Image 1 (tube, rainbow, N blue to C red):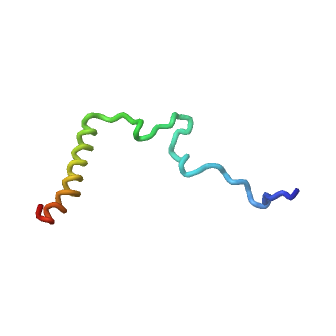
Image 2: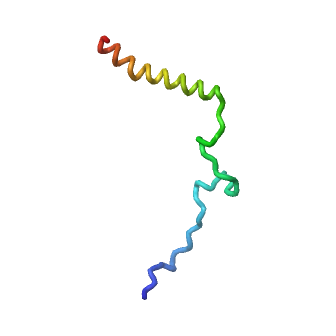
Length: 65
């Protein structure tokens, strides 16, 4: 059986850009798992209200409703 690997190329280093600046031994954390305060929730809610007002308010005003 033929060997399909090319031995003329050097072995690839398995480092990736994702490894740079991260502690690989630490447990993985993601944004939804991070703690947040009631202030952050309030700001998010305010941003949502402004977005909904812009998304629906401008078209409704333009249509004359």
